[in-house]
Image 1 (cartoon, rainbow, N blue to C red):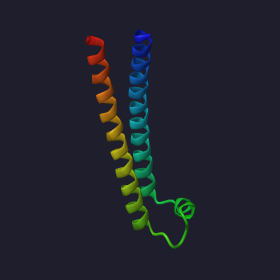
Image 2 (image 1 turned 120 degrees about the horizontal axis):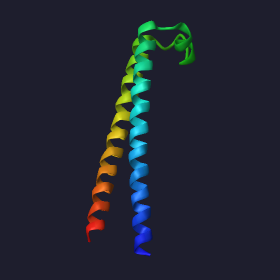
Image 3 (image 1 turned 180 degrees about the horizontal axis):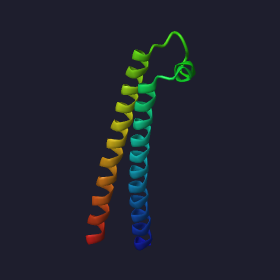
Image 4 (image 1 turned 180 degrees about the vertical axis):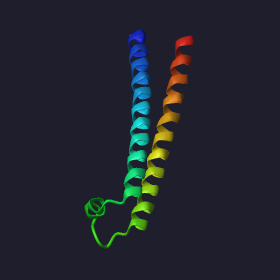
Length: 94
């Protein structure tokens, strides 16, 4: 029974690392896409976000805060995954 728990824990750690990696790739691709859109400033993007009441300056602030929050969530996920990895290794030694 104990070996079954270790297998599940190792699988959870592997899944957590894949999740961290995929989320990091998503953040990178989304950041470059947003940089492209903020450089070209297409009219349809501003209309998609709400139209006239919103300016490009406000949109940049919203995007900056959103990415800051997403990176903070990503960092917390990395720390939890590192802790889970170290915990799994410690259990395997005992």
